[in-house]
Image (cartoon, rainbow, N blue to C red; front, side):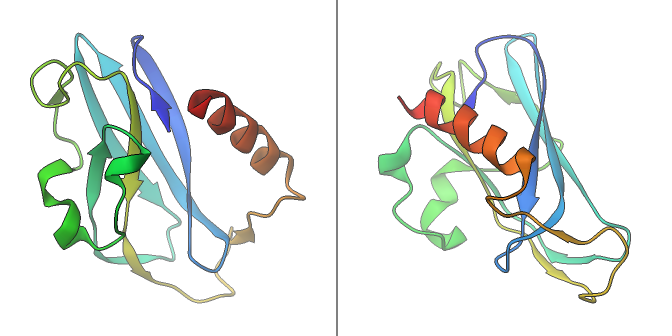
Length: 130
């Protein structure tokens, strides 16, 4: 969940399906638009990328990009909040990147509920959902 009602930059962790921290997405809100970019650890090779900005949890009916095409956007694309998102400023960011990496890659670490960053993120997301 993201609150994009105010200009500024937010950082969102990118977590692999095996709960490893893989990198981070940057969400820049500026002048009525939002732009999403990302970076991954240097040892990771991105095979494919997908970004969707959904209006709410009910729209997240699948994790298959084919079923989310109406919400799809390109990384680095300026997305008009008024025109492309219908003015919604509380949205759900969905990123599905397929990557190859070695489990011994430098910087790779688990993102678990014992990690203070996890707890902070979970509390922030819970507050947005409420």
